Length: 384
Image 1 (cartoon, one colour):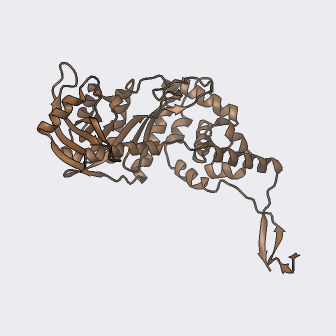
Image 2: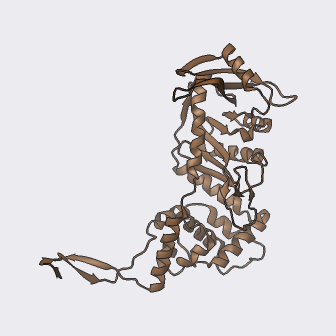
Image 3: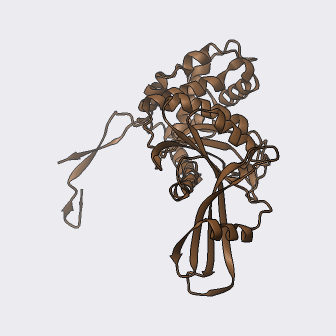
């Protein structure tokens, strides 16, 4: 083959090798094979599915395989049902169809009291984290702590008719799952699926208690945990639960509600330590006590109050801007050591940020086209 006197330095030959996009699933399959959920699911009782043609283990493993490939819908299974590599990599005896996945998962959820699927998955997740996760602690004062971050993250499902979709506090229609992470690396400990209209504190104490128990088993009896929660979880019940668990500290942002920022500035100027940040901007840091609710003992509160009289662009303000951030905190460290560590709580938003759907859909479209074409050969470049 020549063009304008130039000879192409290779030829095209058709081979018999099989191409697959699922080579990486072999690692996923090997990890899943070492977890205890399989035996638990095989022994579980799912109402209406007493003798399934496709085992519970194969159904659950197939779903995990899809998630590992960023294919989050049941229908995605149809694009891989005929791919031998998918079943081989995950150790599946049979690949279920989309209706089978949907019906089996719904049935297991409806009979959770007897199926025990959730407990089986939690046990396997904890086993996996305990065996493989390397959690990096943060240093606060003279101690190291493993971060324990929990937060509700609204998901935008506008213009859909999915069950449970409702108005979230972010102003969009969707769901509001509660997510829990361990360590600076953001190892997922739990995700509680919730309707969008559900208040972030509703159900949080129960989830917090259960996850702290699991976290203790993962990190060991001697590691310190520090719980970080947003102001939506400013409730005495959360403080009490943290105190019930050994070696657990907490930093929970307070909801000022009707507290005056002017009064906080006056207190900070009187009792706090001033830190000039630039001309016209001063931060005051310190600690005091407040009563979480009537009948409760006073609790330690650390605070940072920022007074801004000149904007960053040099404009002077007639009325100062006042920013107040206060936290319930029992961490054994000074406010100057504690306060810089709380903003890292916002990092957890990056752990579950939604990616654009475009690349996933395009990959699925190309994969489906490949499977329909029946093309199983590849072009081999052979240098002359």
